[in-house]
Image (tube, rainbow, N blue to C red; front, side):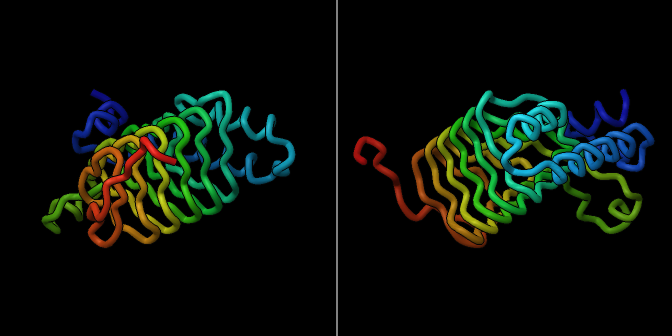
Length: 188
């Protein structure tokens, strides 16, 4: 099994593997090209994001600066939007649903490390996938941790640190992020 295969399946892997290093460099090269394209050249920007990501919807927009590790593990939904300064560390797959809004400086981290320092010092790490449902709004500066799923139609408050799954149709805030309100999506 390759280090890439280990990485995307949640097994311990070596991020120093030559193939993984080259994949991160390729992503950074594409991101530099995107950063140089004026915002009004949306079609050109989309072309490069489609090259970078595993999958995208037809309509989406991502503000610069945007940072990711690989890009190839990001599944970007239809009509999804990322505001300025979003970071996605996509060692494992990141699924972003339809009509998702990421406010400025949202950080999505799939990579994690062993807790015991001797194991951590070996450089070996592992990753857990993240799933963000449809119609989700994630407030500015929120951090989404490895392995988290956020249910459809939910709202994550600004500055929240999401360490556990969040159900559908709720407002969740805080550090650690907790549900504070159910959303009645039958009304406007």
